[in-house]
Image (cartoon, rainbow, N blue to C red; front, side):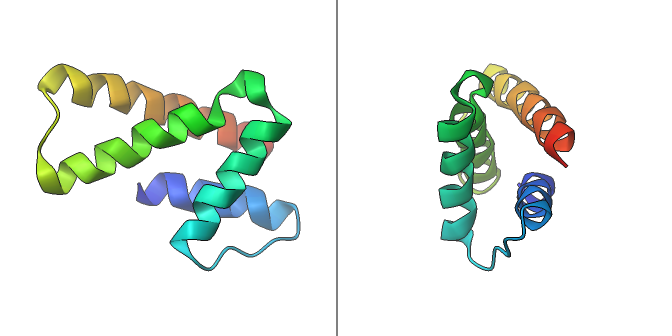
Length: 83
């Protein structure tokens, strides 16, 4: 989640915003989702969040980890485009 959070903060910074709280990250991603619904930012962010939770809880099967990992890669790619 660290790479995702930093990429989100970079996109926000490019827009003149400074994100200081975890909740602000989620709020900003939801704004991106509203602005670009076809990009599925919110869905991909939720997959990243679930993967982060799995790091501590180990609730996902291996296939879920792989699937969410692919979603994180996709999210990072889409965020890089906006940076």
